[in-house]
Length: 282
Length: 88
View 1: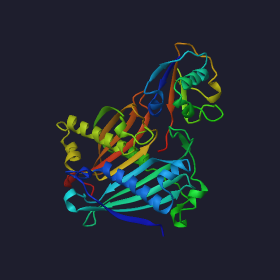
View 2: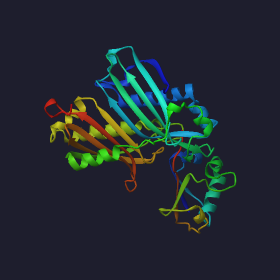
View 3: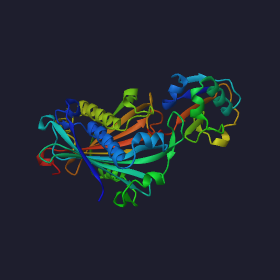
View 4: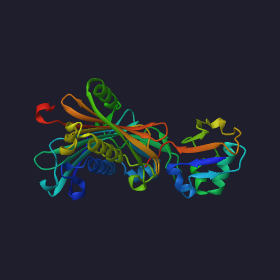
């Protein structure tokens, strides 16, 4: 059986919006939970970097919400986390549940690519397999031969092909240090913050023409998918190219995060919202 | 040659983004840059003095392979240094 770790963390208001748990908070808590699991069952993230010259970079993530978990529901969030190696050591995947009372949960699945670090202060690295000494720390049930494959390109193609396009927008941004991690590279949950900013800008600009868009401010996001191509670094300039679609009874936003030069793709984010009951998917 | 420094490398050039370097080749420009900004040296070069494979170096917008770094370059040419990925 794969090993799970469970613990509680006290809530604070910064984890929440009026609509429920912030997706960015779930990702930050989830990444921390994965580090906690690794530390308890295999090796700490710091030792992985410092002693084994191995970094972990998230390249694909999915976030799904049951009923919203709200600030006033309970004093603590219940965290559950497990980890596994996939693709013969080319991926580390974590599964995290962030729960409130009444069995409400946010579920995060994030797949990381190990990097073999060069050993320089910039922590530069290239994709590599986890070393045998690290692999040995995982149980047989925590090693899966099949690599994770993102379903996001297929989802995006289906939405674009079969959905009804409602509106689009572009929001420029600059990456500042408070958005970065230890290597002056953006911390991956920032992709969600930037995408959400793009969506809110789009809704504000277009809601009068397309009132349906207001569902994306009135209701919490139900599902998020992320796929990373290349990171942004400190002071990099980019833009969020957002488009809104009605597809299979849901409101879907596709956000392409692109570098400012030639619009090189860096990350893709989709957000799915329930529509009012007469048009809803569930 | 005009060297453009980006992102994660900025802290090694004291946050200077555009630096003019007098050198006949891209490789020589990188060496002089690393001499001027010593913290950059271990970031840019491995123990054998070769440019680390984790960097992407562009000359006037064109990606250079490792064996093209000795190509001659003029004062007005533009070199861009990018770190492909970091692992924190």
